[in-house]
Length: 398
Ligand code: PLP
Image (cartoon, rainbow, N blue to C red):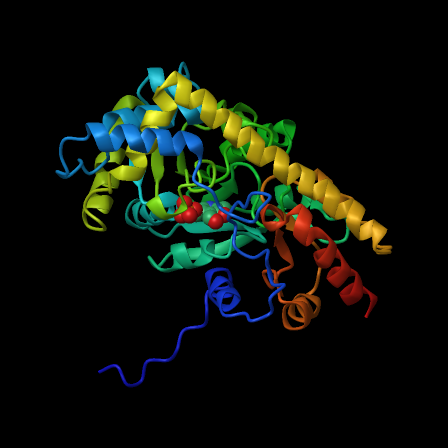
């Protein structure tokens, strides 16, 4: 039965991680996968998470199933983080949220929901986008198209081209936006541009799907939600897939949420009942631990302020690495202007290195970067900066 099955290609990001693990170069550097590292190159467990876990272990009384959508406390905490506590979509009960296994799980549920209830819809993703987006939507049989986003020459958002592309999207299709810290470019629309996009969305009649995996990694928790909230001033319907992998460092606990927003509470109840059906037939109900940690941290004032401080520290360290990267490259004699890297948001930088240069960095220097030239700035440290920039300078000089 299985003898004719072909070997699947390695995943462009997680496959790189596997290759890195087997790399024998003692000076190897991993700037591939989007995982935060501290200045020692470790991915620590946040203090707020540890404290919440201690409390949870001491107080939990059962390992019984959660409901399909997860706990009420978690769902409320997620909505307040996304929209702010007094937002219209909360007070009018127009939004319903279900816990999901990470942001990927949320996107998968969104994909199944779209496939079932918006048959024939194409999902439009930015060019470029996170490497997994296409696969997630295609795996449920949805068509995926792409809209213009990045201008490689100016290394910035090509907003005119983006508007022109999205003006071609017909009513009833779905457009995926990165809520903040666009992956892989690190370039986001401004608040004014978000407002323009929302206006276009209402005019065209497409459904916005926000992938919100990096809240707090750009300018701050509230600031990073601005695009989504500005959009909601005009859009009556929306899907949001958010993740706590990065901002809580809970990568392996798989915590996220899928939120559906409708024009009325009645519509939201109906749509959410269908979201729950998708979940039931997929993984039945979510795991408890990671979401319990997030709930505890978000709702306990002392843990909440510790989390915000720790998140701020992660953000500041990445920003510091951006500046140091730019200045170290300059000090190594690189003439090309890399200052755009200090302007980008979040964990990633779209470096402009081409596939040959990326391959050379890997084979000659043990430096791992995604083939598109995306660099995880969060993997840079004061210790690896010199060898990293020296290697890039050599590769660029070839
Ligand atoms: N969306 C984007 C843009 C991402 O970069 C990622 C993770 O890298 C995800 C979603 C998925 O996050 P999770 O690990 O929570 O599934």
